[in-house]
Picture 1 (tube, rainbow, N blue to C red):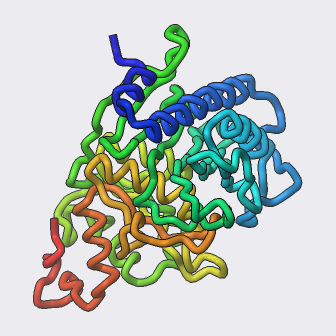
Picture 2 (cartoon, rainbow, N blue to C red):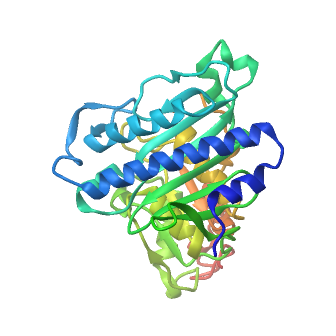
Picture 3 (cartoon, rainbow, N blue to C red):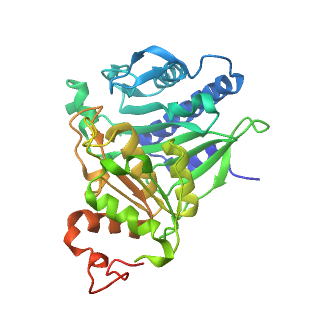
Length: 345
């Protein structure tokens, strides 16, 4: 029989009291995810309708966004959480001020997919709260992603999945109604180093900087181009679904900044989207950057900071950084090399 999530968390924590509190928080988040899953399954008109407001990032809130935020706030209130920072809230919410942890969360990733019955998700990051943060709640969300004590995401699709890491590998758990909880599906994921698939919203091609265009052009050229092999493109518009596929099959995800007004840093949030995804990807042997800089090394300026994001198979993410850092080195565009490239696979 597969190991339960509860057993896994207990083995991860040992006698460490802080890790036990992280584990308790993850358990409460799991209970909240089941509640949200049940609301999604129940369906009904209006879940994908605009709520009539925008969130802190200026995005239109859907009815299910608001429901998800409430469900996970209740989970945070039941956990050792001092501060709750959500995409759907302008400012962090103070809870138990003497608690050791903070929770940063995107309660519902992929809102544009709600009405089309495509996978959506929840992304979370668990951070330490030191004494220096208690007088300035905003400062707890200005910590680098490398200090995360736990992170992960839920996928609400044909199955309810939890992908999570506490810094010792990245593990996948599936909700089993017959068991009444989450059981292990895949232990210690290892992200394939060689990519065959890439995920990007190609409709924005005209807005990208030249290095990103050049990189994608080379992928699209396939076996006839400098990469000398064919790539498939996937884009679900739900980062949790794209990330889970990449963790299983290898590949690369790109959401670059571009030339549109307000898109210089892309649209993804550093603290509660990029950081937890990067934590899971790196603990599976992959890499996540803003194009050139490691995501987990970036110091956020605030809870709702945005960042470009590139993650996936390590060699492929490093390749993108070379395109960006030194466009003049793209030898495949030199007659000397013809179709071949110093960057070829």
